[in-house]
Length: 227
Image (tube, rainbow, N blue to C red):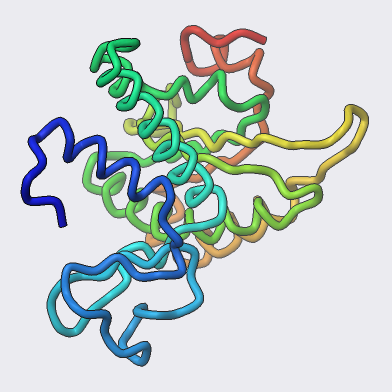
């Protein structure tokens, strides 16, 4: 689209274009495929199509919170690159990592436990295959939180299992203080499905529970978290 631009100008144009993009319009390197093809042209949040036949929408699994986060980051990157080119920022600003544990006030700990590495690989794969549906259920609870997954594991400790790793789901609610929310239903559904498909009851265990931000350091050693 912009063959005459240099590399820095292309970076600026990339973030400018996609920060303003109408995501009902598919992003495609080739002419848009027929809507009848799998995951292409459906009413999804973001359409990013694979370039060869049959075309698939590679972003069809996005949930609302993921989509909002991506759009916000594209808009932020567009502003940062503009400031870099104008001399108001350095390039390091574009690559600053999001401070996940300061971005959310409430958390759900997903603790995956197994007797060995092989069992852990099998069990964690099954759990992660169901995580999207769990996050969607969390989005539906009143009053509709923004949900984010921190998918880097923290080592846990468990006498019964050799492999113990904790993952965290962040929850951000926009409501006045005093409003109550109930996480039991989505957590119960998530755990019930996985209990049914768990290959071994004695070799694998899943624990899911609510964690206030102030308890993260004591519970799992998450550093740099303020209550």
